[in-house]
Length: 160
Image (tube, rainbow, N blue to C red):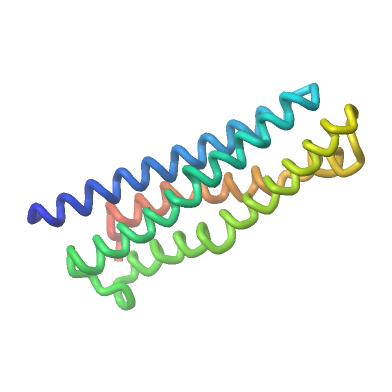
């Protein structure tokens, strides 16, 4: 590997760490919000999850996609359209960017607004109760988490 290849590989690994840190932070904040008893800490936890989504999760997912595609197709010379394992890796990123991350974001925004409204009223609302029984953000964050080792295994072992 040339120095440029090593540099892009290093950037790709850093982007992956950034993305995984975002997934972890969002999920921990969501779980903390789901377990919180009072409106203040629930609202704060949803606020924190939205913050981590915007600062870590979304930019990290984009950075992983950008650095990975450039690394594998440009630096290492694989064809993005005919290499089977690379097509599967691309599909995992597409599912993450176009399905999982948007559903996590929509669920977080809905939960954050419901928690803020309940905080303002000083009691739980019907909307907040509906949000608390809805596991969409955790479900899609979990799917995104499961796609990370799949993409890593495909990249490392290059099965076909």
